[in-house]
Image (cartoon, rainbow, N blue to C red):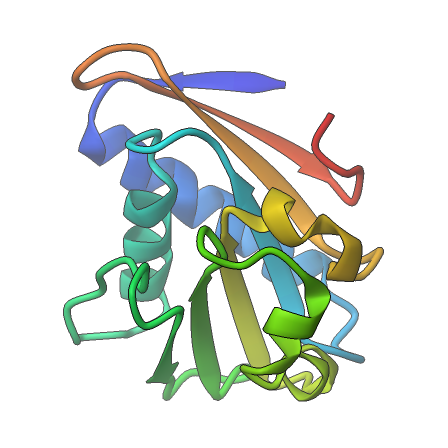
Length: 152
């Protein structure tokens, strides 16, 4: 189901609802991985910021476009780290491995948000939770949670 979000306040509320649902559903055997897809400006980073805030991150969360990965320490269990990856400049699983992807995805204490995850689709585990964002106008965005079904 696709939802229309008319402003940042609605994005923050929806991020909180989706995050709670994903945490509740997560089996805790490996990292919780959330693959974010959508065009530039569609709301991927805004969603991660809202989720990070909900998880207690007090640092300013920005897109890791140039550094590829940012790691935030969490104080709320069951997760110890929020890992924010921007795969826009990545083209292969080999490049994901340069940032330690195998270890990241195996650690159940990680919650991982990957912007532009469709660019590295081949190395996303089957348990990835896929969310697609759309840009309607200056303030309105759409969000669609696909569950474990690859963006399609």
